[in-house]
Image (cartoon, rainbow, N blue to C red; front, side, top):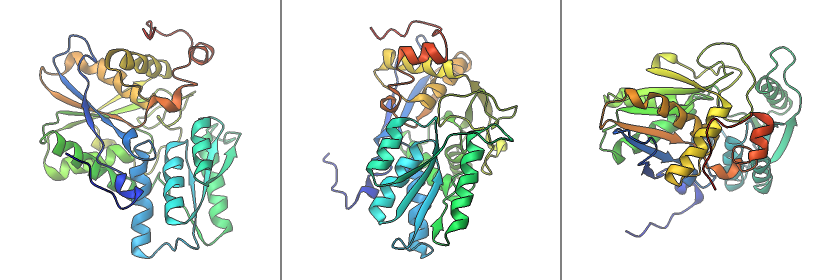
Length: 328
């Protein structure tokens, strides 16, 4: 079937493919699929969030694109999505990032015409870069009455975008989804999907995948090197009653799972996708035969070529991989 002609780049957001990952876990008789979110035009699942948080306010008249400057804290992917859409809608955009943000994401934000404000020191009280980024965002908001802060960490439009995401998955699999695995950071994806699951009466169990050193599932903040997975500050969107099971994954486990995924399936996935794969691998022995699991792959490995897929970076920062990557 020929793909339709789209009227704008916004219509290219969503409708991403669901791909079977046969052979991901050798010997497993459970079915597993990946939702490949890098097919969104900005390259990640955050395009959905960005569109919902901007277009809803523009349609309601709350935002005047000609006068508005959008300011947001982002470790990368949401910044790219907002930069792209601000360019489309004719708004200025400032992304408050930190020194852990991938250079490729910063370059993309600037290519779309966005401005980057870099935070190079963590918050002195919490030791977290996120807290420092949020402090700078609040300063920018206070300095200009025409600044709009979407606030992905507390905006209900964030999870609302992912009610549609879960509806897509349900329709793609005729509502036959036993387990949903999602990495958590703002908690927007997981919350929106869980809300759709409840509203539609599905029996899907939700597995939250958090980073070791993140506070989302509890515990104390610790060292994390891979952006976009976990958080040192729990967002207002977190609701652990929506989670059936939580799994914590280390940075090294993320990297190793990314390497295994491309070896076994040919899919070059990003860091948080590796976390989700590692969680699935850990639970796979307990999953019933022929059950159906869906894994969120928020972005591709192309944005991690100088980290996750760089042997020297991994050895320098994380140590030796637990098993040979098998990449040749």
